Length: 421
Image (cartoon, rainbow, N blue to C red; front, side):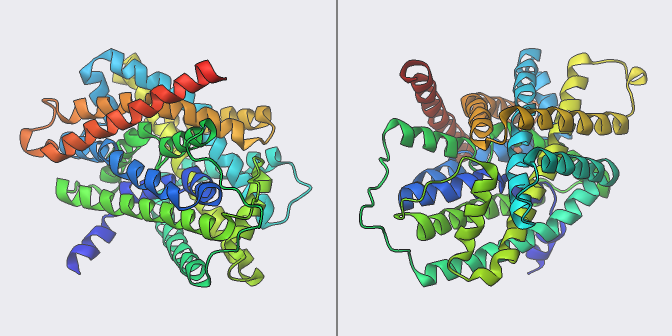
């Protein structure tokens, strides 16, 4: 009991990771996986969570032991590593936040029945509100608010999943034909699911940044076991909730020939109906609020993290004398506002089609995932980390298995995109 209390008290980077991950990959892709392909999608979801675990764990391990971010570790390995990650960050700047805010705007329109309101306007209001919260509240506010949001989400999803399972699967339509699992469309969907399950590998540096911020906010450094326990709790929660979303999609939509909308508002309406069909219309407001809160928290965490990572990357690349640099606070506020402007422009350009935005973000994240995973391994196996704190042999082997797993999918993905389209 004392150990559980200690972990809950120390919640920080692992909590933010869970909140960030339970976004598009869970609400959109996991639900869609169950709805379109049924229980078979349980296999790639579990495999992705297991094989990608070391990449994220290394973000906590490296920073906790060295007091350096993964980004500084990349620079220590060579400036080429840092330039590679800088390019990834630049591309992600134009995709990840836009995808998250787009889905969140659709949920907000559905929640308040704002059918005559432009999704671009709603996105603008969301960007403005969250930017103000981040600039004023910073890490401490982010952590405290997400403890409430994630707790509500876990309870709501657990209750919904139990009710759905006990009520039983919906009846299949007479002419139902299962979607092929191993054709190009099926493989591409699996690639997208694995690429963002539990989230993109490059976000491991976000964990690293949050670890530093947690230490600054509390003036306390956890030992390596406490830090990893806190992260593992958040990671396990994200994996379980992915299975919950997939189960709900499978039990409520698989076999009905329902076409999943590629439009943010249309998908939001389908999502809310999906959650309430087994419980009753009276629960719509609660489910819609929980779904919106989930995506809202994902927007906050991703916006915060990308701003911090962008600052860190630029500082490491420019390496200006400390006295010539603006204050960190000025950097952070400026980065938050620039990200809001860039990604709002992306949303307007793509005209509310979340499929295009998510596809672009998925392509970038998936292709670079094995490289970033290898870079993280190089960091934790370097002289920066004392031998006793380096990953055990089984974790090293799991890392190589994950790199191979992601590399094969990435090669096949590129093959399809280049030669089949």
